[in-house]
Amino acid sequence: MTAPASRPPVALSIAGTDPSGGAGIHADLKAFCARGVYGTTAITALVAQNTHGVSEVYGIDEAFVEAQLASVLDDLPVDATKTGMLSTRSLVDLVCRAVDERDLGYFVVDPVMVATSGHRLLDDDAVDSVRRQLMPRADLITPNLPEAALLLGESEPEAASIEQMRDQAGRLIEHGARGVLLKGGHGVDDEVIDVLALADGTTAEFTHTRIRTPNTHGTGCTLSATITAEMAAARHAQASTASGADTTASGADATVSGADATASETTTASETITAAVERSLDYLARALASADHWQLSLNPEGAHGPVDHLVDLTVTR
Ligand SMILES: Nc1ncnc2c1ncn2[C@@H]1O[C@H](COP(=O)(O)OP(=O)(O)OP(=O)(O)O)[C@@H](O)[C@H]1O
Ligand SMILES: Cc1ncc(CO)c(N)n1
Image (tube, rainbow, N blue to C red; front, side, top):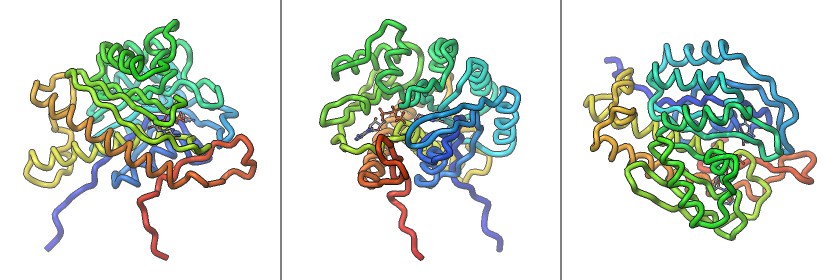
């Protein structure tokens, strides 16, 4: 007797690359694997970067990004998607069209704007499209402190206290996303606090001890990819339960995500988001702690190394 068909949860990352392996699509794929999710990608930019920063960006034109998206979406059932570096306004618009016309599953937006080294990863004229077009389509956006301020307006100062973070997360929700996770990694206190605000009015705060390590390259990418993986797994499980069987393509029919979800479905989505964020922050804390003393760079002075994406993996040789 042949085994019944089955599949793992599937996640898609639309983002730029990091040949040094710590951030961007490289980090996303590692995080997807680490969380037991099948990873797929559409590359928006080839980025020459390493633990010292970005040196060059080679943009991918819209038609080719569209072809990559079609390759994935015409063939595979995607349970959740994240965006990272989108580079240009035309790519932001392309992704918005994909959300409207295709089933991307749960949709997580990491509004990547500037690399830690100061290099722009999103054109100035694309910020408004992220604010007005991309954010309202997102189940969750994950800005860091400077990104949250920029999304609220040119003259908005960065939040410098937990009260200001709460206020900004609340105002960002008004832009239409189902959830906002305002990340506190750029703060300086001994504790890192991340604030989650959801459109249904619920809020949550997650506190972790700040690890005094230079190895924080790609934490934002890793976090948003992990959340996406957790949400892909949740949607896959929800679709399996709904169909009473393992899914092949029926993940695409799950009704928990999307603008037309009913009130009770929205509650389910809020719970899914909150659980995914909590689990992902715990994983990231383990990955940061595990790489605390890593020295990967041949030139360690001023280097920001990656986290240990495979912290939970045991390899037998
Ligand atoms: N030193 C640290 N100790 C503990 N947790 C941290 C530390 N730095 C970052 N984090 C965690 O990582 C998450 C993402 O970090 P951050 O706010 O720096 O995002 P980011 O700026 O988008 O990251 P990236 O460096 O990839 O651009 C934070 O929400 C926080 O939970
Ligand atoms: C490609 C890419 N995306 C995002 C970031 C931000 O960490 C980065 N350094 N590189």
